[in-house]
Length: 314
Ligand code: GLV
Image 1 (cartoon, helix red, strand yellow):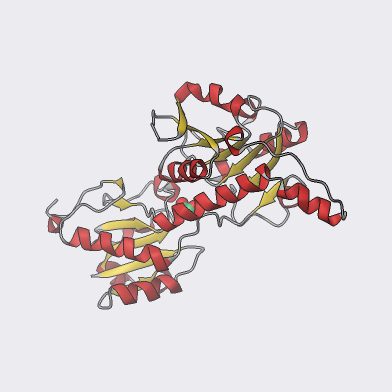
Image 2 (tube, rainbow, N blue to C red):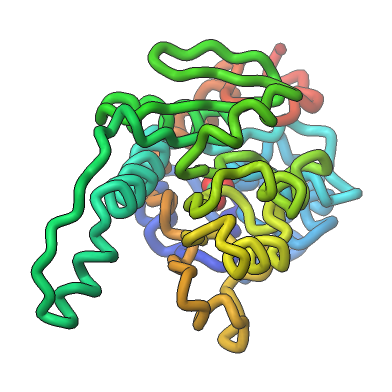
């Protein structure tokens, strides 16, 4: 048995090191070093953003383990083999995303940008602060990420509203579902987008949705760039519907150097780092799933159940 490692666009070396430590007897082949003979040996594919069609070319493949939470590459691949596909949902990543969201909520609620500007002018002025429970933050999408983000904001005393297309109940969060989004939007001072990219959510944050927000709302995007209609976000900033946008994900990554987003005075850009996956914590989750499959147990979280091989007795 052998493992394919293709962490496309990101670091393979730390994964190789972590896998060598956790599975010292296992052969791990990088995608770049693949040969027809090695393709025959691959039973597990650990991939991120793999080339469409590639995973169909490993005749003994038993499972695909994504090296992140998003499933777009698999969903867009018309030639996926019929094997289980697992997402990687690392609690460390969820915590990092929640802290990223909290950082920006604190930034805008406590007006740290205003104070930075005042310092640049040697200007001393203290601004009144509304109570945190009077500063409503709406979390869009209450999957694993959204739930963790919402919980952390509520733990820090913020008034948190949450919306999901399904009905979800969470302690200390005002939960809205389906069409009730229109009731949640006008109450929000900040929106944190945690929605997965699907055909339903593509460009969901568009002019129609943004027009329902109170003036000067702050938008934070920690999911996927394409959930936003980018031109509508820029228009909402120009109109004052949004006061600022914090963008960590883009429809093209890396964000091209000539993108006007880089230089927009009301946009804060980070390079998809709100919840980066690190092998130091995540490799153990992947290896535990491989062991589960080897022992005929159910791995998780499954994105697609696929067909387990007889060897799994599942
Ligand atoms: C990162 O964006 C991920 O999907 O894990």
